[in-house]
Image: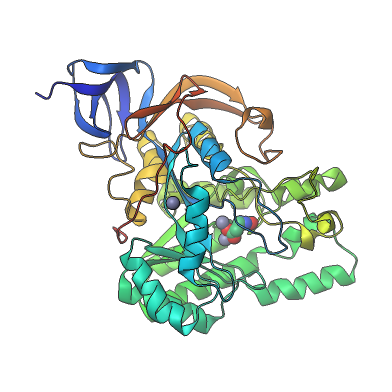
Length: 466
Ligand code: URP
Ligand code: ZN
Ligand code: ZN
Ligand code: ZN
């Protein structure tokens, strides 16, 4: 059989979304070319005995170098964001390209590409955030961009300046119907949030915890129901991103029971954090502010159940890093006067996989194949990354080798992102991706970064493989 491998990964336990088996993996010219027993020699060899050989993680929900509404600078650029992603076992990320009001999508894309080019440790592609669905954007630009490989876009039902009304969401979904693209929806009812913010402010209730109280479950449940209904009216599949609680999950289940194609996504914060974390002393609760907010133990249980039973197809980080302290004056000083001025989002691209591996696989909640599906295979399929997310002949050799015996205590000091904290400080995890390959090149060897920025490249995408 095939001789002359560039690299052979030998003796590991390989996991795909359907099977777990012992095999060697032969790699040539960046691709997996053979999987089998006792493969011939490679120029380079990696002994994976006692370790799991998994597809590199794909994180399809990441924010990098995006401006927040208040002009606060995100803590990660593409160099630090993808370095952090890589060190946590990821080989591809899908960040967002945010369209500013009045800006063309192409101009927005140019900006993000310029920031990413030559600076990435992982492969990347972009979702588009449609913030200004003008006639020319919906009529010409967006369809052309789908042809060019930007096959997914996110719309927001919340955030002043970003939210679309129902008519605009319907029109954007109609572009997806006509072009075969996929719409992702952030489901929270902005008017209900405004109303609750008004009440909290009138009562002088301005602490970080009020962020969660002004975005209760009903706000997310209503918007989820509406997004699913709008998608049903247009007759398109839809992705409900960052789902945080049981009632929202029930909406997804009900839509599926009506025959709708719905992709559900949840994130580590909804398994590991609660609204009580926003109560921290000295404004520390700001470290846990994200939208939707983390909820309670029942919601955590519902999200675990959704991962176990297939309600969720995607487990993503929603990495959206802002610094807590502000030595350079980049953080809006108003951030510590009212919950309204705390930028929404928390870091998590490096900890996503270890948390699910440790809390999910090692604790017996999900099996290894489900882990692979939730963290890599499904992301590639849903978002049209044809050569990624699987260990199979012909695929890009994007591989994470996990040591299940590696125990770590999560400490921000040991992570690689640009933020100054992790919401998971002190969490003990079992298992870590200690060696990571991107396109057959060893990027992380025995937990040491050996790849270079610029090794990660832009990847155009096909339409969803749903
Ligand atoms: O709070 C969050 N999730 N910030 C990131 C932006 C978004 O809505 O995904
Ligand atoms: Zn690029
Ligand atoms: Zn969102
Ligand atoms: Zn997000």
